[in-house]
Image 1: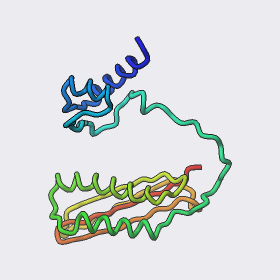
Image 2 (image 1 turned 180 degrees about the vertical axis):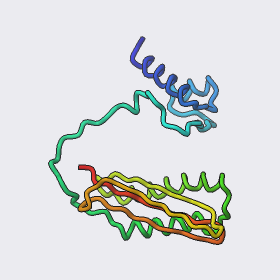
Image 3 (image 1 turned 60 degrees about the vertical axis):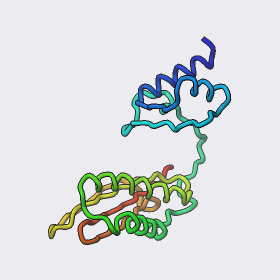
Image 4 (image 1 turned 90 degrees about the horizontal axis):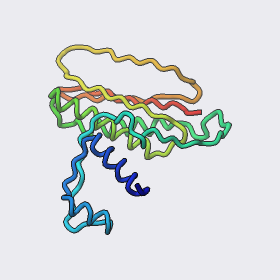
Length: 179
């Protein structure tokens, strides 16, 4: 087997394992492989909701050299992240009514949007954890607590609460400095 055959086999195995479905026919796929594009090509859809286990590409790690840097050069901007949280929650949930399935999907979507926008701030060496809770408002109370083991000098968090007539949402971002 040639090297390209081995890589094709790995890619095919990975695609089958993840449950991807391509809308390209065999001829279109070979044409794309040869020329890098196809006329009237279609997209590929992947049906994974869970990370693949045992995937060779996910196990590859990048070896980094030590920097011997013990503290952050730039602290986490809590005020800016608070504004991001308020904006995202308001934009996504302002007109929404509470529906369990919709809110489950919205919590996932909102957490990904928040994580992307905070990562776009390009704050070096911070690991981010984003948690979004969405619940129904019906004259009840709820207490949400969290515990973390961290260094109070460099690690921090930001959170925001949103309420409308039928639902509430709490979004939290934890920023943990990676030494």
